[in-house]
Image (cartoon, rainbow, N blue to C red; front, side, top):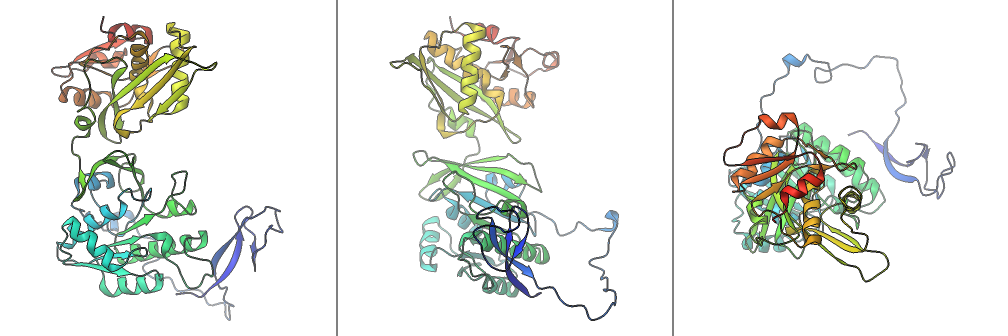
Length: 457
């Protein structure tokens, strides 16, 4: 390994300083110098050209073999689907989530399944002792044959063990506890996290060993450390959920080897994380039919259609300014829909507190749920339920028009599979050619027309 030296690099202008300064002398930016490990510049004694090896020579794409890139299954269907079918050899995957959300439990379950194939699996923990991990494995029913536990935080020692044993899978829990000796900063600092991730990336690519990194999150919900950490890894996953709900969502936000924005649904039980193969049915299990202020939205999470219940409540405000509260949707989107309902449809919401909730702790970010949200608010305001066997798909524009969304046919087929008889969609020529068995497709051009078709009068 080439020798390195510690220097301080300005994140604003890129200047290099021999020691830390509160203010960069080049650009004048405060607190911009970050401790960085830089290679030592060697003095050249001759003008001899460097030798080009076969590994560094360019190769034609047709001559490169793709053998040995069979994905590694983790034994958890939802986990494999979020990754795009399993782990690619040599990939580096970052998994973040709130404390206590179930990251370590999910990682240990995956390690236990892979270890059954009689190949060594390393679970490296910097936060728990081996006895604590053994206690969790016993609760999860993992016998541990082929699964090796290492309580270590020194990265050089970790890499040495990995190179000697050549495991099939490595889990490091967590990346913020690992450090390198060359840097004086404590573990978890920006320089330590960046250097450790870079070295693990080189190890994964050179040895074709998939590595799962568990990362802490900040108060804002993003992974702690520099953003370059998310650019270095091949995939970034977030384990989300509410402590008051038993369901957990594994969301993919970056994936070099598969589709991004995929979501896997799990249920937290005493025996660990149990995958939910039909999340739409789970989210709609406790729906009260008929009930005012309730509508079903057909959303897409990656390549999977997902039906969720949108609940809305409007009541006369007791204050000068009415409240707008959103749980599970963007608050700005709620303000937009309330304005469209007031201006284009004539629903008098200027003196109404409006509350919108997505049942089950799920978060909906795409505009395809606009029509369901608007119908739920309209239903609560007039105290008239929507048609109970109807689902809603569509984006609402500022002019009150309905706009189509992507993958409409897949959404309609999932709607019919769950037993809904009708689905209200935007009126477009392309949708007239779609036929779904046992599903009546209703079309509307404007939001006002859609509200008339959706109301149970």
